[in-house]
Image (cartoon, rainbow, N blue to C red; front, side, top):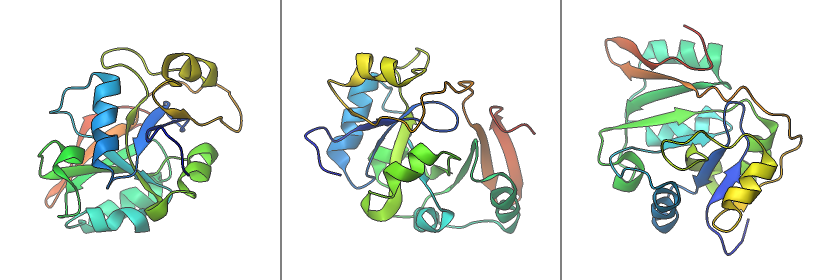
Length: 182
C-alpha cells in the first residue's frame, strides 16, 4: 500500500488503531507525534497470524500456546521477552514486546497488503482521550495525518481495549482486564 501518509488508521475488533510497518522508524515516530504519546509507552505488534509475530519474540513459554489457541484471534495482547528484531522505538527500550491478533476482517484485509503482515500499533486517539468510535470520527480527526482505512462496515465496537497479559517463564500475570475476560 503506497501513500504519502505512512501511518494507517483502521478498525479492529476492540478499538480503532494506528499502525505502521515495524521497520518504518519514521512512521513509528510519527505515531508518537500524532498521539502526543509518552515515548516511554511502547507500541504493540499486530498481525493476522501468530506465525508472522514469532520472529519478534525471544522465547514462548509452553502455556502461552494454550492462550493463543483459546483466545486468538481476539481481544488479547500477550507480552513476551522481545527478540533483537524489535527496535527501541517499538518497545520504548523495554525488554518485552506485546503481540495481538485482532478478530477483524478490516484488519485482516489491511495487513494482507503489508509486506511481512505485521504492524506496530496503538489505539487511534490523542493520548488520554478516548479512541475514535467510527470511520467518520477517524476521518474528521486524523485524515490529515494518517491513511484512514474505510471499514467493511461501520458498526461501532464496545470500545473495550484488549486484555493484556505478561507471559513469563514461570506463568502469566494479567496487567489489564479488557475485552477477554479472565
